[in-house]
Image (cartoon, rainbow, N blue to C red):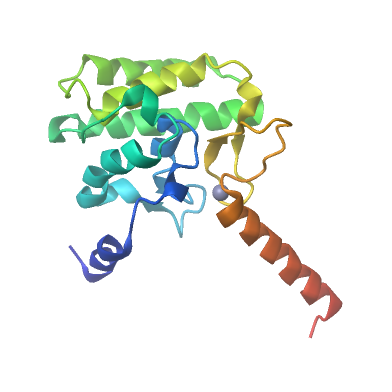
Length: 192
Ligand SMILES: [Zn+2]
């Protein structure tokens, strides 16, 4: 392990903010931070300690914790299928939010779900729980409540009454967007 990843391991925590998705499958998809930004993207599951710590944090912070109860870390032999499910989840739902459901991406997601459900993982494994969460999201009523955060690009469910949420987490991304707007305004007023 090189030095920078050691620092990451030491300073990184699965906080409530990391579970802003509102569904386990989205929180799993959001474990890749700044996915759209090749230069700055970080895969939190690249570091095994963070992958191992995820289920315990999910039991504390995930919006679906009551449905899945306690989930256990994915066992080594199932890690590949779990990560494939995560990528298929992100691809299908991101595309559905942007341009509607795509059958090819849906089929790929269903295949990834099937692979996990047929696999050798623990019955209470986070991978199986994620597969069930993804299935529930495919069939969710009011799919327009799924959105992409205007600041960080995470997928999240907008459960607000008037469906007006633009940020995964107002306290983090909402404030950052506000600060950026303020900064741009100041720059316009005083270009020097
Ligand atoms: Zn965000």
